[in-house]
Image 1 (cartoon, one colour):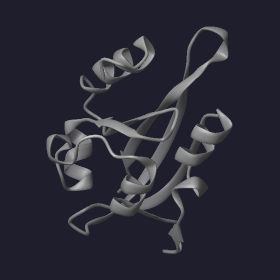
Image 2 (cartoon, one colour; image 1 turned 135 degrees about the vertical axis):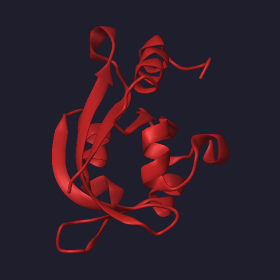
Image 3 (spheres, one colour; image 1 turned 90 degrees about the vertical axis):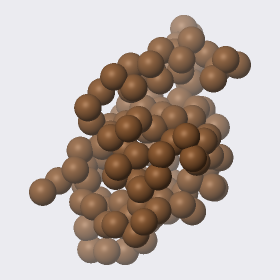
Image 4 (cartoon, helix red, strand yellow; image 1 turned 120 degrees about the vertical axis):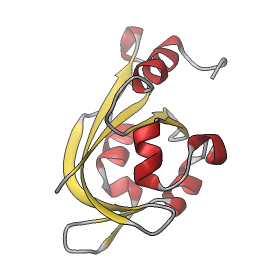
Length: 129
């Protein structure tokens, strides 16, 4: 992450301290990092997957609405925050690499710097029981 903004570097450091699953994406939609609680949910450690471009992670982790219909990542809060710069939140299902389907509450927060420059998105995941 050395070539990324200080905002993304600090967000990654903060995400690594949280007990909740967190994803960190840059402004282009590259999945830069996910923490250990997210590794459990997604079924693979970040050390194995490493950073993934938007098309790669969207093909690896599948999203479904509450009726079970597949969602394009652009139709989730991730897409809304990446493309529109707005915070968003929704309940949906995520299917990880191992095929486990989990109902979650996905909350996305855009990361902005000086001059409202967009740096990326922090996504907080809350499993719903």
